[in-house]
Every structure is written in structure tokens, then in C-alpha cells.
Length: 283
Image (cartoon, rainbow, N blue to C red; front, top):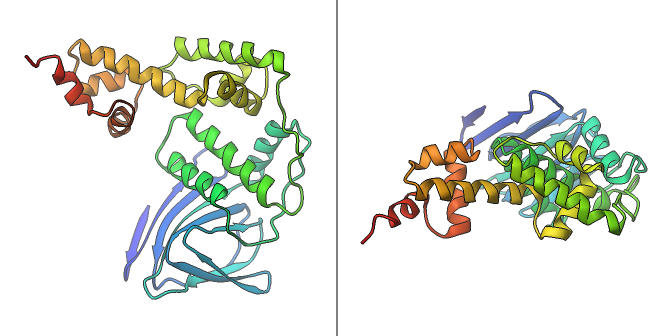
């Protein structure tokens, strides 16, 4: 959903199954009345600057900075510069945060509290910028869960003043990492075109989602979602070599979005799917 008024615009997304919401917006004139959310709210300012009052003090978030609001934190907001500000904000329900932390720490992490409404943390900003499009763009389940875990863990471990996760996250013993990673690799190869979730992979490996992610990266140098995408791209290449239309190759290889397929094909192979398919006809 989007709205426009006097240069202002906003695009909103809501998960139909769990308390996850996201907005990408640019505001020049809009002024937020004091309000709060029943979720954790994390935002990245992309351009301009936003000023707001939270917990009795004034704050400003400029480009590259992160805003962090606890559930029920009252705050307002407006542009701090003439040209307005653009930001991406995500509202993550406490139950979702709890689920991520339980998976990372085996239930040993308390719920976080963020004392600073604005933090200058490039690592966290990058994690949030990666999470937002994965949520609103309908990314594969593996991509969404990996980026959600990365963002929540970065937020808690790097910026929470209370309830930060322990220094030692949940890990597999060294001898169990390689077998778990191989098990998941075989599953991905057998069902690369299926919408597997992070929990599906963890169940197959017999460990937590976080532990499996770490083991797979250590063994194969990439995330399970990256490997899944690579398998889909390889299958699509084979279909294109056989002369299949690009849209047909994308769908059969497991890509639900044609634009997504095109973008990743170029990123990985340097040419468009159409150029690759037509190369075989050149003399």
C-alpha cells in the first residue's frame, strides 16, 4: 500500500502469518503524532535526517544511522531538513524476536532492551537494509529467515543494553558440523526448486537453524539460500542451452519471479539469460 501527499510517499507491507511489518517511506511534510508500537521497531535512515522525541529527550537520525524502539516506546517524528528524509522501518513482534533468540542461544538469551534510540552502526545498518527487501519483495523462505536472524542477532548482540545474547551462541560440536552441512547440501540438491524453509533444513540436520547456518557457511563458503539459488541458476542454464524460453526456464528452475531470476543470472554470470540463450545460435 502506498500514499502520496506533497512529496510524501509510503509503501507498507505486512506478513499475513506473523507479527512482521515493514515500510519504505519518504516524508517532507508529514509529522508523526506521539505514538508507540507493540513490537520492536528498527529503522535505517537512507537520505536526509529525521528528528524525534523519545524517552524525554530529542534525537536525530541522519543517513546511515539506525533507530531502535522497544515495544511501547512513545515517540514522534518529523523531517529535520528541508528536503525531507527517506527511511526503511521494520516492526518485529516480541514473539518473533523470542523465536530467533531461542534458536540462536538455545533459550539462554533474555528479551532485549535498547537504551539508545539512535545508533551509528554500519554493520547493523547493512543487516537491516538486507532484511527489508527480503521481507517486502517476497524472497524465498530461506533468504527471509537467514536475514531476519542476522538482523535480530546484530541488533541484540551489538546494541542491546539488557538481555544481550551470551558470548557463545548455539553451535554444533566441530565433529558434527561437516555431516550436518553435507546432509543439508544433499537435501538442497534433491529439492532445489522447492520452497524449503530454514526450519526444514534444521530438522533434516537435527540442530538449530542458527547452528546449521554457521556449519553450512563454514563447510561450503556460502549460506544455504545462496547455494539453493546457485542450483536453480545452474538448472536454468541447462534449460536455456536446450533452447527453452527464459520465462519457462526460470519457472522450472524454481524462480517465482522473472525479474529476480534475471537479476541474479546477470550478477552471477555477467550476461542476461536472453543473451546466454542466444549465444548458442551464433556462428
